[in-house]
Length: 320
Image (tube, rainbow, N blue to C red; front, side, top):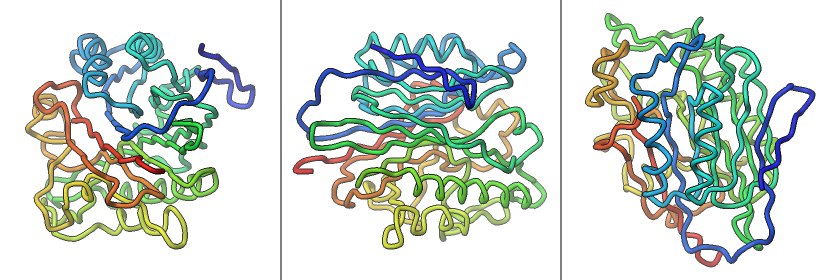
């Protein structure tokens, strides 16, 4: 049963869920993130084929067997409501989102097979990367998820600010990158202050590759911004773990598999087709050993649901 709660402080609407009892810890937990590109401004659709894609998304995700789902850019309220209803029909009765009152809102949603026992919104990022970003209230969401009677985890999603690409420089706007980095630091500090459990999973659109961009090409080293985000983000002794790189035995020297690609038909025909293909979507974790990240894949390359591909990671939970 969903519980709808109005929080007077932010005059917002959330959906949470009740639960009857816990279950044994499953063998695996599959986490999925997708920037849905369900974007409308003043009631006018910006993303192409929105109705068709919105109808396909729940079943396509359910077919993959995802347990925890993070979605970004679900901007219009009616998509939040229709997606929640359809996911519930498919066996995902628990959800958390912020129904916007004014402006675009934050576009974030969390959908879960497992009970959500608490939920909260981070403050809106203090800095906006671009002028158009001021229309959106970009931030992060945090929920506690009851996986079993012995395992509860923290689950986060966020959508960082977008950047403008300068073809002549072969790089992104420097001031915008600095503001995006400030958002990373804000999120890292907020996550550290809100974590309640040994295991945390962070899934979302960070709007930047993990490698250094120079002259229109990525160099085989980790970017300073990526290192700023991941370094000691979990604790003084633990960095964020990039589950995709770990599960696929990759590093900064490996051939990347982008989640935002000019090979995507929606990108190729769009405003940002000149920007390089890159990894923008991630599933990070704290408190999970590397050997438990058993599979991670870029998804929906052949079944386009957005201008972003999705990403899944499966974690081994045996004996946790």
